[in-house]
Each structure stands twice: as structure tokens, then as C-alpha cells.
Length: 186
Image (cartoon, rainbow, N blue to C red; front, top):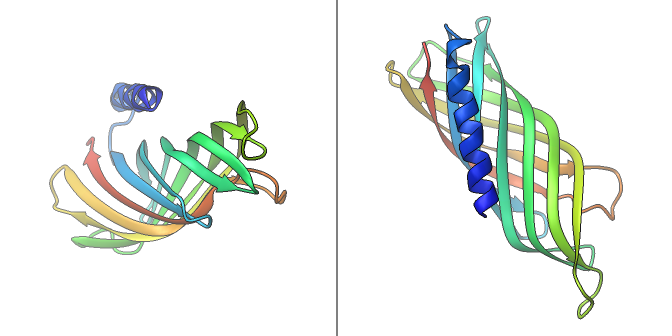
């Protein structure tokens, strides 16, 4: 868990150092996330990123996050200490940016770095596994903008941390919710 905290702290430091490069129409976003997987496991996590307004309705950005669960049943295996670190680009399609409440669609694509201990059967020893795979998310939500520098957002969608066609992969996916704060840099 200490490595998740350090990774998030490092990401926030990098994002704040980029402030000088991104002048107008940029914002930093910090979120508290939760994935409820199809195996009935919760994956709480944090994410942060920097986004730039592009045109009248689009926002583009880059983000990273971390999600963790102490145990996760998958494919009859016993999985312990599952840490997922996605790094991704995101796109927002805003429907009414000029209004106080802004509904939006949100897409994310990237790569997930997985780190966990796995036992192939109950009573067998655990071994350490590190993997990477495709990360994807599609969601919808609303953002409240108080016309100052800080806004808040809430969204729900479908998330997959390691999407593949192999049914034996450890690929947490399911319903995701997110609450976040936005801080405008300009």
C-alpha cells in the first residue's frame, strides 16, 4: 500500500510541475474510484491527471491511477494483494460546458500494470506475478463548475483493467464509480 501512496504522490508532483507548460484551458483532476467486479470484489483506488480543453466540446488528457484489493477470486485461483496501476489517455465529450452543471461522456484507453500473488489451488504455495494489459473505460457523469478554480464531478461506467479474449487471464472488470475534484490552472 505504501507503493500506491508513493506512486500517487509522484504523479501529483509531476502534474504540478507541468503547470508552466499548460497555460490556458487546462485543469488537474483527482478522483476516488471504486470498481465492483463481476466476481463481486471491490477495487478501491485513486487516480489523477491533467486535461486540456480542445475545441468547444472536447477535453483531452493523460492520467494514472492505482487500485488495490487484498483478495480476488478468479478462475478458481486464489489471488492475494492485487495491485493495478493503469496509465492512460482520456477524452471527455461535454454537452453544456457553459452551464453550471455539465453532463459528459468519458473514455479512457491505456495500459494496466498488474502485480499480485497467486496460488493455483487451495493449499498450494503462492508465487508472485507481474503482468501488463489493455485498460479501457466508458462512462457518463456530471461536473459542477462554480466558475471559480475548483469544480467537482461524479460519474459511473464500465471499466476493464486487463481486457483480453483469454478467459484464463486475471482481468478485473465491471461497474465503476468515481468522485473527483477539478482544479483549473488558468
